[in-house]
Image (cartoon, rainbow, N blue to C red; front, side, top):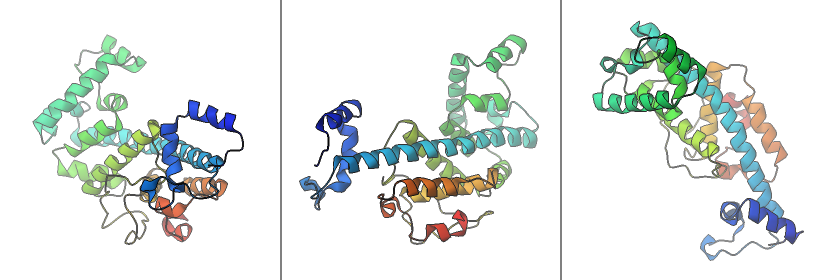
Length: 276
């Protein structure tokens, strides 16, 4: 590998770690990759460029997923309260299909409430006699994954449909996409490589959608581009004037050497209605 400054490379290896960087070296190996032979002319700076791109992509996606997560927290709590006429519905077993799953969720809720130092939780403890806070407080202390666990266990099919329909989806697809986004969020949070990852989860494909979708017949659903499309779709429902498309295009423009085919992008992705 060509290194312009070996001392700088040594510093990168110390501060980032060879193990982490090795994932970004892998694309530069000749075939078969198992021989671990680098292509001629491979520069360390190329590896670092991939690493930097992946880092910026993670930060961008984490910020966009946050918008979706906040909306899901609010919609789940508010629509549940409105439809069931009960602001404590999340902590009542009669509203859920599986009592065992409900008890697991309730145990998580109790643990999170007990450890929470949030002012609004402290205020509730001091000023109210109920055992649990209302739904809109509880959803704020739970993880993205816990929210999906609660949603998927709702007994009322009507309520599930209303919540999913707010985002222009059917319950089955909504649940699948929440799982996919929660998984991606955790990867971004824990600094995992995502740019060319072959994700394990296979998202459900919507048959009918409220908002603009994309032709996925020739798309690799386990690559990051499909997940970008999911994020774009959710943002269409909660922030119609979002600039996610411009952000992605801008990031790719800053890193012209990135192989977007390895990310699952179709060649004419900018022309798709979803991304215009």
